[in-house]
Length: 225
Image (cartoon, rainbow, N blue to C red):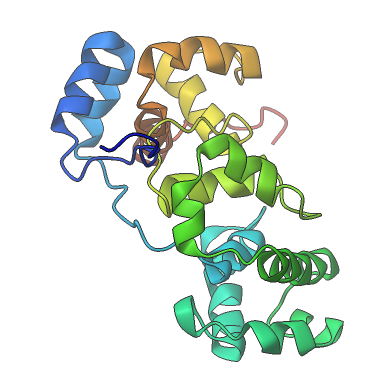
């Protein structure tokens, strides 16, 4: 690389066998999840464009099925990917934006995200060149976009390898179940447990999610019923 050029941010390898081997050696408990849950499936890697950001906003605090339904309706109305109609979003009334099923707050956030994206002249290529912390700082300027939303873009769109979404309830629940913790781990506990995963904390996170999916906690009957 010539002098003065900055190396692009690291991304998840297409073949993560070496990373999985290092993770398993660094953390025997995580190794159990790796062996039990099978191959890593974080292969989306689609562009981190404005449409993706809007869909991430739509999906906040919703089930996967409901979020997908609303995102589909939104995409049918405003386009998707590089065909996303930015001008149509900017010209839309608040009620137009709500029509696919967005709440008041999410409709406002989608508009704010579109305005910032346009004002900053952002593109998937520009985001791909920025480090994680700068992307989080940039996009959380949008009211209604928090670190969790941006971290999902980092993990599943930009394929960043060392993201730790300690805000995510499913991740913390999976960590509790995998590590046999009595309660949901605090942020400090999440950071302590995940320290050996670096620089592959995105992978460790995915295996906590997958552990929860494959081995959900057993429901206990209410003794009063």
